[in-house]
Every structure is written in structure tokens, then in C-alpha cells.
Image (cartoon, rainbow, N blue to C red; front, side):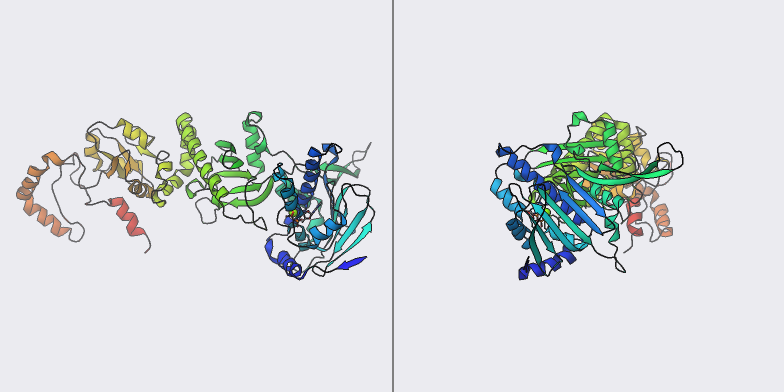
Length: 559
Ligand code: ADP
Ligand code: MG
């Protein structure tokens, strides 16, 4: 038996690895299963070019075997295996990736399915194991070898017996400490959960022996244990399937399985992009507001997969804030990952995907608005506020995306209308888009300021949400029409008869107005006769751009 030292750098790296690269212990299983899957892929690629080799899909699998009595967890695969030299170079030198080398050698032949590239995943096993033993027999070799290591001190390597080609990784699971539990990695239900979470779409079967109880034959109250081999992963992800094969129920089931929400989604968007960047995505527009949606706790983001392996639960870079209600996942093979796979290099590919997704969501919302108005209004009731916040907070750069998606209550239609609908109905002499702000539609309806505009036959948009007026201030214009509050001093259609009127005011009522102004000292800047009133004796109006409602909100804001 030979005892070898890890290289000095390796020692340091190994410690770093175990303590800091990964934030969750459970991902060791994802890494070992990814390696096993890579090993099977390699046989598959070899078979593509080697006539001697037949790839019979059924004989390739991965098996996870917990053994509580011996406190071991074994991950077994029927992949390509490792020779003695490969055990030394691939497992003895940290950050040496045999898989990356394989990909380089085999390019341009489609080697992109292989996941490994950093040469560190294997060592994550030391997060949960004191000793890691690897027994492997390489394709085309007659002898098998056993590699064993207890961590930073180095490893041993010796010949051993193994009948079949492939690799077994045996982890001696750590004892529980006061604040860490390792026992869970020997529990079947826990292991099944981890496999479902990270490795559900690995293309080869992941098997486990699962023991359950059943009624003894011929008895109706005696139970016996029985064990069956279960196939844990679902292998073909729904997003790789053809849209035409899938029903609305399939998507709803996926939505529920993934715990995206307890409601039923209003719409699903299935994208299969093949252009400058290759990715698949399934996105959902929920029906209801998640309970924490308008709180600080809410985290936006999409699940991110690289080649069927879950990399990140919530990748926030994939969604702009104003579409933060969108749920779903993205799978791409063209991402550059960092070592722990928990963070992405912020790269061009990701930005391209995000851009692409944004425009897909927008166009799907527009078509919902056009074709399924009721559903859109339902959606808007839940998330309209977020869209308006988007208009407001984005300093105009995404106005284009959002201005056609926002809606306001209309004085004429008595329902929500879009700006496009409003503008298309404007009479020729109408210059502005009029709005009135207030706490509710009923209260706005009674505002004296709305009378004159309504009398002119113009439609008024009712702003009942704090954000409404701020949002249109940001928009400034829609299709070249400016927005105007019905309480603003100049309504834009008084100009012609205003002048003589002003003079008359000054002379006829000067004393009265001065007296009233004196009474309201500090509360108003002037008292004037107005032509805008019909059935009400007085109203307040503002000068300049800030409406009364906006002033209230601004005054209420903490400084
Ligand atoms: P990566 O997967 O990023 O290459 P790892 O540290 O996970 O890095 O693995 C290091 C190397 O060890 C792999 O590239 C591969 O060559 C080899 N290896 C690991 N596990 C297996 C396995 N089950 N079968 C065959 N080779 C393996
Ligand atoms: Mg790996």
C-alpha cells in the first residue's frame, strides 16, 4: 500500500473547501451524483465513436445506499470508472478536473452535457464524512483500485477486487456534534428529498432501496417490512419536453410540485430559446399575491439550472423588480459557473437570458390583456401596483415596457382602462389626459374639480393608489399627450375666455377675495373667481405640478 501526501496547496485548498466554499452540507450529494452522471456520459460519448462499445441505456444507473449500522453512505455508478493514474490525478490533485480535460479532448463533439469543470466538487464529501473511500474499475481495465483519504493528511491507493466497471464512493459519515447533525444523511427520506431537490433531472436513473411496511399475506393486522428498489429522479424535465405534449394540468402540477404558490397560475410561459443564447424556461404568472409580497422579506428570482442540475434557488438577476411576481425556472447549458455553483459569474449570457425573459413576459402580459381581459384584470388587481412602482422607480428606462400594461379606473367606462384605450377615445380638441386623485372612486366622483372636465365630455382617470400620480409624473406623456390633474390651476381649455374674466374678478370681488384670503392666512396663496365650478360653490386648486393628493403624500413621508 502506498501512502501519498496531497500537495501543499491542496491541503490548504481542501480545508478552505470544506469550510467555506459551500454553504449547505447537503450539496455533497449533488456533487457526487453529478460526477456519477458525468462518468456515465463519458461512456455514452465513447460509444458514439467506438463500434465495439454498445450503450445499452438500461444498464447505466446511479445508486445511493445508506447503511446505518456501519454509518456509511455509498454512491455507486456504472460509469467509465478510473484507472490508478486517474484516481491519483483526478482525486489526488485538488482543482484538477478530469471532466474538463475530457470535454477539451472530445470537442467539438457535443461534450457540453458533462457538468464537471472545476475539480473541487468531489471534496465536498469531506463536509459530511471523516473518511472517503473510492473503489473504481475503469473501462477497458482488468484491475480495480481503492483510493482512501481521511482529509487533509493525504490518501492511500491499493489494488482491490471489483467485478464490474464503474465507481463506488463510500462515505464514513461523521458523528453528530453538539451543534451539527450528520445522522440525517443516513435517512432514506432525507436523501430522497435531497435527490429530488438538486438532481431530479439527471438523465440516468438514480435508485435507492426503500423499505416500507405492508400487511402480511393472509393477515389483516400484522405488518411486515419489505424492500423495493425505487427510481427516485424523474429524469426528463418538463421544460425539455415539447410544448405540444404538455397540457395545462401538467404545468399546474409542476407549479404545485415546485411550491411556487398555493394558487393556480393565471398563465404559464414555456420558452425554448435556440438563438444567441440557448436556454429553456417555464415561467408562471400567479393569480394571488404571495402573503409576503409587499414586504421586505419577499425575494424575487427564478430557479436556475445548469444542464438539469439546480444551481440556485432564487436567481434575482433574471427578473426586473417590476416583474418580481413571476415564478419559475430557467435551465441553460451556456452559463459560466463559479466553483461552488452557488454563485454565477455575472456574465453576458445571464444578461441576455434576463433581457429575453423580460420581453417574453411583457408580450405575454400584453396578449393576456388583449385576449383574456378578465384574467388580466384579475392579475392586475394583484400586481398592478408593482407595475406602477416599476414605472415610477425606473427613471424612464423601462417606460416602454410598462406603459401599455398599466390601467386606471375610468369616469366614463366605470372600469379599468389602459392609456391606449383612453387616448384612442379622446375627442380631437382634447389636449391632455385628465386624472383626479382621491381615496376612492366614490370620493373622486364627488370632487368639485372634476365637474368642468366632465362637462367638456372628457374622460377622467381616477387615481386611488398612492403611487398612481407619481407614476404618471414619471411617464410625463403617453403618445404625446401630457397628463393633467383636474385640480391644476390651468386645465388647458380655459385660455380663450380667461383674460376678460380675470379683469372682471379683480374689480368686482376684490374686497371679498381680500377678506377671504385674510381669513385663510397661510393656508392659501390666493382667492379667485373660477370658471371651472358648476354646482359647487368653491374648490381648491393648485398652481404648478404637484396636485393636492401628491402634496398630502409628500407631507406624510418621513423626512
Ligand atoms: P469536476 O467534477 O468539477 O471535474 P470533481 O472534484 O467533482 O471535479 O471531480 C474530479 C474528477 O474526478 C472528475 O473530473 C472526474 O475526472 C473524476 N471523478 C470523480 N468522480 C468520478 C466518478 N464517479 N467516476 C469517474 N470519475 C470520477
Ligand atoms: Mg464534479
